[in-house]
Length: 335
Image: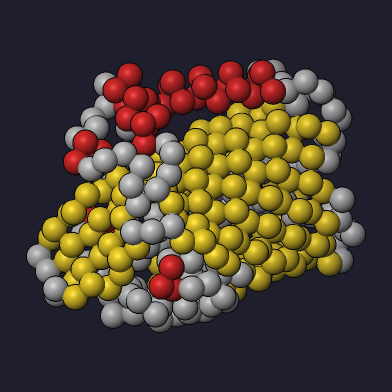
């Protein structure tokens, strides 16, 4: 997918420049895009989005509204006694509330709504791939805009979704502690608990409780008159026994991310980040078992001093464990 990076970045830059009008005095620190793997069989677990290293200031509250849509096109992959099809679009609308408690601690909760649909992006993505000289071989094996999420093992159907599904996902509770913060660098510790509020039969949740522990670090650099921040996340996710996949899922998964935020103008940041995790399943299928690396490029428009709009476009780099295409849009407001 590497040939697609430059056109995607150009598209995002053009969009950000067109939308942006105001030049507010910033109050919000640079922070990564709120991205995670939206593979339908992986998003059911409690993998957290990439976390900011700088927590909220004392007595501040933040509300994030994020929309993700992921397009998948994996048709009838057969390895040994397993068969998987991932053909469709998954969407996720999440509401995240955070509140500072004292000088160095914050708590919060995320309420997600999850849906799986036929989608509308297939034709766009096929045209995009054709323009860039990328393959549409997988996509040409089935009609456009069809929903078929299915997994069979040992001849038994574990899951088969062919009609649209919508519902509440797994609610996540979390807390964070600021360990260090100065003018150049910051370090924070994050803990989150995912609760089994979603329906495993609809792929809206796993049916189990998951615990994630991670650290987030950022550092500011000055290169001539350009200012940019590098950020790093890393942690471990401990998985409860899911309703559908307890016999093949792993019990712990390492995850991490890294990226750069460039302060391009007074109110626009350009972001490039890599998100990765180890395999979630003990399976012969790459779509379930492989380690993954996802590239997301995008930017942030600072609409006011306390409001920002994130836009990111993601591509899988070398495995089918991540969706073929991801769009992330998030509105973040601090009070």
